[in-house]
Length: 179
Image (cartoon, rainbow, N blue to C red; front, side):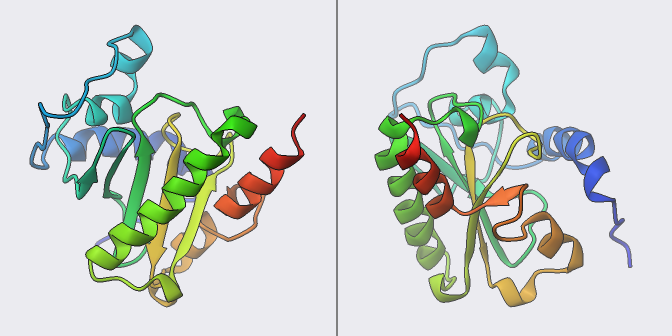
């Protein structure tokens, strides 16, 4: 009862503002051992780039040279993580055939992190928000488990194979069709 409910259309702007405020209250996890990407004006404006660069605090559960993984600030289920590319890619529509191996790595990493965090891949939902239905313009894969514990709004926002939330397999299928 204490948690407000918003319509899906109002969430985009509100999620960004809430994300920015909530990330400031989480513990920082920057890593000086990992390569820092080039600081550009676009990276400076992107919340997820700043998290990847260690400039914004976050509860990072995995990071390597290509990806950063942390829990979603508005989890739709007990296990809800975001797999981000360190490289700034705006969204799934910007991907090319050459990105297929990267998407496959994101799938494998998301399942690995879920298992490490105590979740089950058997009951997980993976997907990308399809533009314009994303709150942060930086490619990120959602992994949500268990599906059975998703609430009404979560099931609507992360509805598999909808025009606003697509599975990574569907993204790969579309990339394979690109010239």
